[in-house]
Amino acid sequence: GIQVEQSPPDLILQEGANSTLRCNFSDSVNNLQWFHQNPWGQLINLFYIPSGTKQNGRLSATTVATERYSLLYISSSQTTDSGVYFCAARLKGAAGNKLTFGGGTRVLVKP
Amino acid sequence: DAGVIQSPRHEVTEMGQEVTLRCKPISGHNSLFWYRQTMMRGLELLIYFNNNVPIDDSGMPEDRFSAKMPNASFSTLKIQPSEPRDSAVYFCASSPGGTALANTGELFFGEGSRLTVL
Image 1 (cartoon, each protein chain N blue to C red):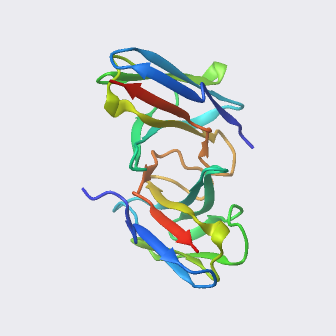
Image 2: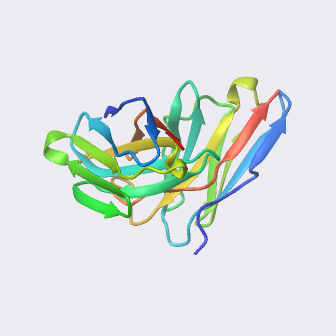
């Protein structure tokens, strides 16, 4: 099955700093999503981005499907950005419909 | 619009008891997924329904687990008998526009049901 790997596993930021999170996937995909799991455990949709670039406030994401990776950018980080960031991908053309999750990047933003 | 609604939010039970988790997907979504999250294994897909029909249950751990979707607006995940290793957060998610073989719709999660089996 598809493999999804995220890096780095952990990230400590000072408030106001910028950062880049990476997601590599092992095969062509037709769905790539980024989620933020907040400290209360809620999984919040950030981006649905099988290809291209999207921006939402201080967050943006880019997926380069041909090179099998996606990047999530956090600019001017705030303490409320703390939590775990997951990317998840679905294999293109396969009968299966599993959205396979990466292991996550745990982010701590310090005031 | 209401998101995916799960109940109960928290459940504490004793080993051997039956546990039933409930989910109401987003109206109009025709695909429903049950995930389990643990520290050791992360997020795992347990079962996937399309138009109320179970399509892929290969992630269901064992016969103690069963899931049903009697109609488009309701699904249950049952564990009988429960064991301490079943302790986890169980998420329900739904997405629109899929077929049995292909689903590219954006996935939306409920807030999860945290299960503790003593």
